[in-house]
Image: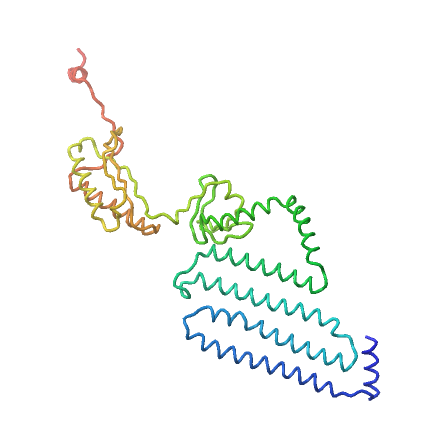
Length: 369
């Protein structure tokens, strides 16, 4: 700083050669020119690579564009400050040199993180790859890689400032024990999320529910601490990941078929027609285009009810779509109504029959003597 003040006084007195200012200006101009040509080159490459079917070259280009621009300015700025130091005797580089090392590390880390983020999008997009990967798995891998890059970059930055990494790691080990005891619930949620990523009982977009707790909805996000589920009334439900290690979880999204299971009652007076009705309904289901005849298909008399002869229908639709399933179920039940009526039978409803002995009826008819 003293050398800089002395140089400034000499500059005012006119005793200093100012040619270095032109050099610094030239360096800044060359840096701007290099950045301009770098942008032009990236634009030209983007046009050429857009014609190829390989997605990784596009991802690499997009990830490198801004970090390369930052690196150009870091190099140009360091060069200009170096010239200023040599010409003025100042000590700018003692501060700028560590900052330059940090910026180089940050630039490399920024490039890697940008590459990972774009790779995540590409790997789950059916438009960019023929076999999209599971979004949950890709998200877990991306989070682990980004965390690794962040930790590694932080350690390298500390080392660049002269700190011992071994000491930092030793302190981290001792601190990790203390944190582990103090934040056991946080760690339980972390490992619960890790089990979800490894076992994959569900993924983002799945409809899940738990018979143990009032949890049901569509999975929107699986984080390291909690999972966000959108319930069917459109409210977000945040569940700590440790919960899933202690409860049963159903995943209806992975069902192969949807089941139709209905109990139907006919009148007792239609007993002679029950066999024909059941046979016609079974034939109808076997020929129905939306019923999967390869799955279990049962239509049988089941029980003698209080006021009806009960039979049941047990079959599966081909679709798993909720709305389409109800359309098919409605069609099946409508056909059942037609079959029952075509056999001149009818559905039962709760009735009671009172049997009066003949002696009582005769006594009532004759009246009192």
